[in-house]
Image (cartoon, rainbow, N blue to C red; front, side, top):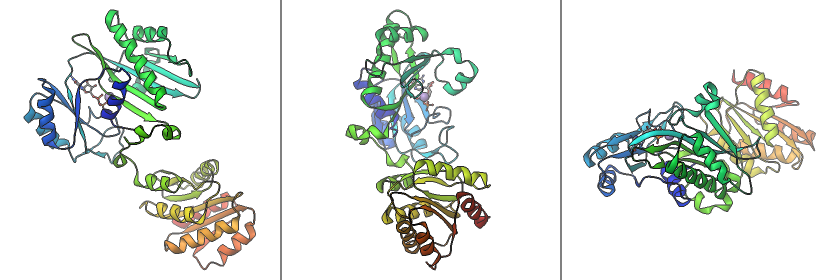
Length: 386
Ligand code: GDP
Ligand code: MN
């Protein structure tokens, strides 16, 4: 789960990460007011969407008066912002963050990520901030420092000092930098983040070190421990199909192909997507109905798949282990009838009671094809939508 920059900054401030004063706003009038409230000669109006690259796309603007702030707000609110992270469809700007402007001397990069290989959080730091870290990692990997964080003890003070040094900070700035790193790591661990990124972390002309941007992602398996974080969720930023799927305990991820897949088990789902590609097709989604899928879940899964305009055909590939194949067949039949399915449907069942299941499908009167193997199923659905 992701949150907005202004929310991340509010959380990080509680952990001692210095940020500028800012006010979230939903209307141009609020932005006008906010400029006055901040009482600075320079402010920044920042589009709040769950994507970076806003600066280059015109979503971050420096303003020097309340009128200018209002004009910028009017030009941004309701507009679709397309950045290199949003994809071609972009994101609609519904919220702005008005922040006291900073006089920047240097832009640095700092992040904490969960590193599976290290089996721990890792701090990533670079003196070259504000740029694409992915690009830097390719062209000059030596410019990026990595420090593994002990999963129980957390960040050691010497690591904080080493990171500050790598960032080129000395004297009082080194102290401020080390404190900021420590705060970021504490927040990351306390809130079960998968990512906490500050890009850029800045040194201002008067020597203050702070977070100018903030991005936080949370491990969804740990959200039950953080109801306060769950409240920060912005459903406008999420795919409505994925939200709907979650309600029914379905794991759904939208992809950009045209074959809707209903599968049980993540491994089988991945194998199904691979075989579809192998046969020249392209999956529209990854949908795992879980090991013990019932009729209601199958029906809801169908509805979610069909709500995707790109879907031209459906492939059901289910292994009857916990569930028997005849129960699954009944679910598929009932669901297809309930949603009045018009698209080509190929069903491949395997497992307990598979013969009874196939017989039910064959005798259902529905216009569907059955398949005995995954290969055959993929070939059939690819041919059916060709
Ligand atoms: P992103 O483009 O979505 O990553 O948005 P950021 O919050 O990182 O802002 C993009 C860029 O805008 C930063 O790298 C800065 O160069 C610039 N910027 C943001 N806030 C300020 C500010 O207070 N003062 C100045 N001078 N520049 C700013
Ligand atoms: Mn940024």
